[in-house]
Image (cartoon, rainbow, N blue to C red):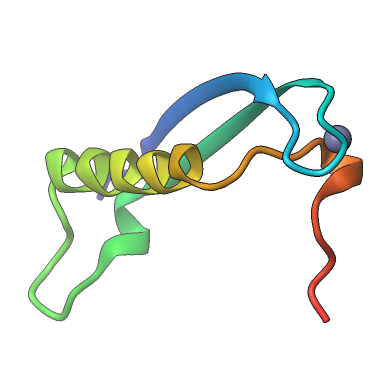
Length: 74
Ligand SMILES: [Zn+2]
């Protein structure tokens, strides 16, 4: 059984959607094969990498905020 951690680091920069100042953020996504059980065995590493890329794409598609400027959930 593999416990290898699959990681994806990404960063972006732009103007903060809240305060308008320049902002640079980093994100880190990771998973192990054990996180991806789907009833028929473990996902392949390629499937996990695809999922991490999807999460990274989602993060990049969201408005950019400083950590302190992130809207608080009601
Ligand atoms: Zn800001």
